Image (cartoon, rainbow, N blue to C red; front, side, top):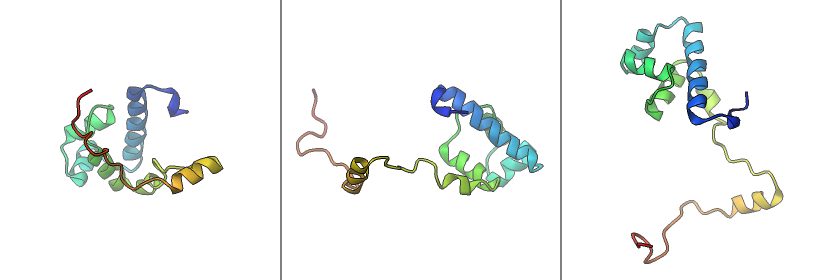
Length: 106
């Protein structure tokens, strides 16, 4: 499945379904997973149905399910050309507003 071709809600539903399959495969009920994560059963239900839950909750569920290693390559910037490699090496660690532009109105 190429997630880049789907809408955010569809991606959320797909990932939620994957987490649900992992929960079931490991023999956890929603209540048991919720207890281990430290959230309510309703929060686990919301997660599994693709509804809004915090990013931290998703990470906690992933950790409890033993899937944290799969986060290692999530969002890693990987330049593809020599020019991109050179540009990435020169990227600043922080981006600051130019002097006098912070809060300026157009």
